[in-house]
Amino acid sequence: MGIQLDLSQVLEDLENTSTLDELGDVAVRLRDRLQIEHIIYHWVDGAGDQYGYTTYPDRWAERYREKNYHRIDPVILGCFQRFHPVDWKTLDWSRKVAKNFYKDALEHGVGNQGYSIPIRGPNGQFALFTVNHSCDDDTWKSFMETHGRELILIAHFFNRKALEFESDRQPDATRGQSPREVDAMTLLALGYNRAQVAHSLSISEHALRVYIESARAKLGAQNTTHAIATALSRGLIVV
Amino acid sequence: MLRYLFADELHKFPKLADGMFRDRADQFKTRLGWDVYVNENGEERDQYDDLNPLYVIWEEEDGSHGGSMRVLPTTGRVMVNEVFGHLTGGEPINSPVIWEVTRFCLSRTASPHTAGAIMLSGGEIMEGFGLTHIAGVFDARMIRIYRLIGSSPNVLGSEGKGRDQISVGLWPYSAEDCYRVAERAGIPRELSRLWFKTAFGTGRQHRFSLSA
Image (cartoon, rainbow over all chains, first blue to last red):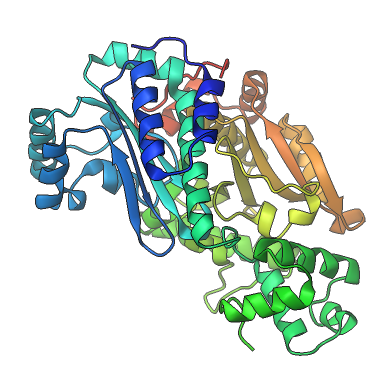
């Protein structure tokens, strides 16, 4: 394991992907190129819907669901609400339930080494990208030293692609409005002119233009009127 | 010592957390006169504190807050894009290898080395998590402080004049800068790494190859 990885090839593969199934194919090819046992990609969107792809054996995936292991899995507990990459060794496996879980995982074909990369996307979207393998600590350390940074980038490329699928269903709603943008749009919706809005927010008209333009772009609107209508209809501003 | 704490871990260090939010109010509202919200407990908190950010806090010998900063990944919601987006040159900063630092704060009684110690944590974070840059928002008076500390940012854009000038800048990762900052702060690099490891575990600090 740990061969030279062509990052641009992975990127190209992802570029040519248009469905979640194809994303799974890319994960398998990546796993094979890295010569590791498993890749798991799991994401939760802003609405709480979950998707994922795993190369773990089906019987482990079933067992995991059946046992509600997500409630005690140290990887989930250690990565949820976090945003830094985590080597499994640094997690807390000291509790008895965690030890039993680990043993059960190994018996079902999960490798003893893992590296998980939590990702924070826009609008509360969250994803976890994990690589998993069976080997000793030194081999794993050397693998991570070579590929750690690439894996962080790849994890985010995966997520960016998954977000594209998301935005197909929910156009242009991938970036949240800033508080200033919400204020500006709300005042405009109330019938204030630009000078009045700028005055109310204690900002220059130039700065106001920037906020409006940014809000318009995020909403995918043609002009300011369209942006206000869109923001109102999505409940982003209330008047 | 430097502590690395996510927001959901602050309850384990109540004195440190209370001190941080009060010192933020003191610095940003009282001393700098920024338009920030201070709650009835005298704490400055904003919506980004609700996103479970990472705080780096300098803890004084007596357990009190000496200084701190707040860290968030630019792939999620961050101030550089949402509040200061017009200063970053048109494109939002959105990268898995760039994190944002905001609310860089020092208590009134902080020693001259505290600012450097906190900056050093930025270097540890970049090294430990494979980041290429840290993005930050800062006011005019910080430019001189950064120079003294030994790590100046590349400024992307500014607005305002004189003391009221606000800028967005990027600090590229540099091993040299880390050692220089550590030396000026009077903190051995081994100690600084130890604090980082204490927070994030020994196995996690892989040294990434820079070729990727």
